[in-house]
Image (cartoon, rainbow, N blue to C red; front, side):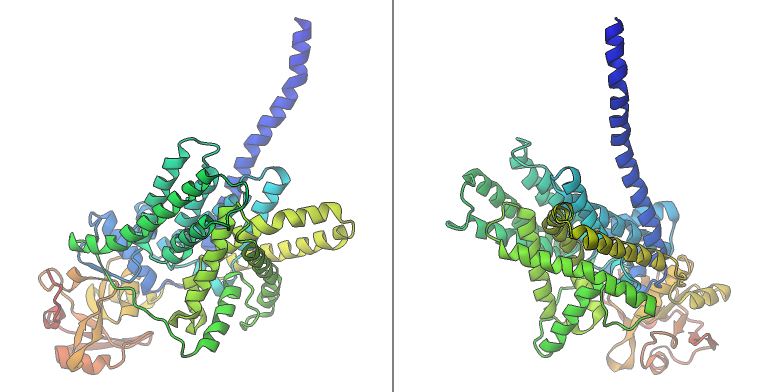
Length: 547
């Protein structure tokens, strides 16, 4: 008995330490994600929410209050119906209606992206190698700069679409046929479901996931290009993944039209915007857009401290470029499907962006937002272990590599703290919303950039619907991110028009007089001109969608 007791006593401390260590790691990960969420929330608040974000918040509010199919709504060419809108509805169920929904949602999305990128970069590597992969990927993404806040930390604009894409790839990477017998049929089914839902929300997933996956799998399946020793069964498994993705793309593309036919939202068509007129300029903008995403746009004028941060962020951007070159150079020799597909996805995304009208200015970088997490994962998988081996084996590396990495890491953390420490920006058109509430003007019209943002700024207590000047110099409803029911004169009574102010509508005053006649009262406040009538202005608007 004594011997048994002694052995138990010897083993117990080791068991306790192992359990403590295994419990500490998840707790530390949770604390890190919560901390990042708070910092991203703070940085998101430094940019005002515009009518684009306000439109999504109002759509989610309608879904939360029973209009699940968004009946009467006209959405943009990207609906976010199965991605950010459910997320916003969840936030609204807890926090209510307000601009904070956008900021909380953006912080939640970006924190998830950092976590997912780290997990996917780690892959099935263990020990120091796995930790180095995860830390490198997370480090590249961890600190978006202030100039990129409205691209990656604000309204839904393709950044959030990368979340289900990374989740899809985590399933493919972790649930493999050699570990789970059911993976051969379960994983293609999961891929189909996830990509179909994502495609309904945002067709850019065709470029960032579906097309690259299909293309790489077809190339790898060609005779003579498959790595020697690969079993035919793995080819059929990859083909099933590609087939599931292709079917998801087709069904997801048709789904918005089906939803509209069944009485749900109507989505604006995705227009072809290819242009070769200013290709040289577009190539330059594409280059700057990539730097902007990685916080390294040294060409953008900014305060000295932000310039220092951008130069330090060049390390991450250069690392991703090197990883991309290495991955493309070994495209046919990789067993790692994630690396090959991500490399091709980045090239396709950048190529389509450069030849599009979106590349005319830096704000178009939202179209290539997926390059950031995809590139971070690629860098983690391709560069982390070589850097780790260099630091462990080369004597001279200890004198320059580790200090250099420490300086870069400190710069990234400094960027993160600096962004979170900036002053929050008020909601767009908040002064107008406050004035309208004070004067009990609760239903009216304005330009698109003044309409939904003012509605949100008032917490829904004031309804402002978007209008534009149509043929004959008369006002007509603005059929973009609007609720057709808001123009129904039997439901609502609009009595005012905002004619001037930030983002004013050209020719608004003359169009107002031509459409509605002389107003009874005209107010001027903080640059805004508010024209008020004693009649329902909606009766003067023609709108074929009124129900």
